[in-house]
Amino acid sequence: MSYLNTHFEEKTLIKSLKKGDEKAFKAAYDLFFPSLFRYSIKFLKSKELAEEVVHDVFLKLWNHRERLHDDGLLSPFLYKICKNHILNTLEKASKNPVLLNEITAAQIFSKDTGPEDLLIARELESSIKNAIDSLPPIRQHVFKLCRVEGKSYEEAASILGITTGTVNSHIIKANRSLKAFLKLSINFLLISLSVFLMN
View 1 (cartoon, rainbow, N blue to C red):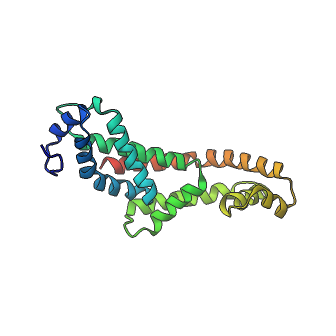
View 2 (cartoon, rainbow, N blue to C red; view 1 turned 30 degrees about the vertical axis):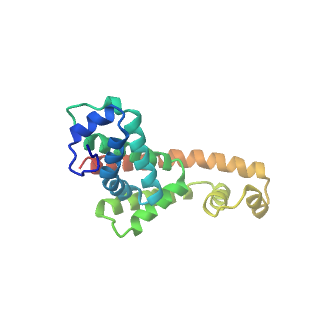
View 3 (spheres, rainbow, N blue to C red; view 1 turned 180 degrees about the horizontal axis):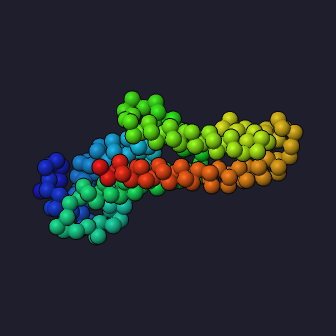
């Protein structure tokens, strides 16, 4: 029996997957990877992140194939996992303002950007800027030098005439402040995406 037929019944595919059939897994991968990738990149706007998310989806499918229901469908199961991975990726990005800024910037300039993407991206871009601007002047300067411009602690210390220990202290405190400041914004993003992802 060939598993490369795109009209392969999902219920039959599930039964084969549960038996550990690698050909069935490849068939599922070939069938669903393109649509899951498009689904992921719509929100992440990063080819690398989207590919990572989808690969994780299929890894979870294989590792938990015994949990599939014989009378269920594979596509809703995969999309649910994919949605959760997208949200987890964005939640992780909330702890890294530079990464979050890259994602939102990509949303703004993407050719495929829709109204909901612009709304979310602009909200987060504004929140990130406000979060950084809310830091005390010296801490703000340290953060921009190290996290935005990519300078080492030694370079930042030399520019500002302070010790590397002081730079490290400012970065730790800045990260704490930004994480707290961005918490509401990332919650807004996750709630918004949850609505969009369910449509």
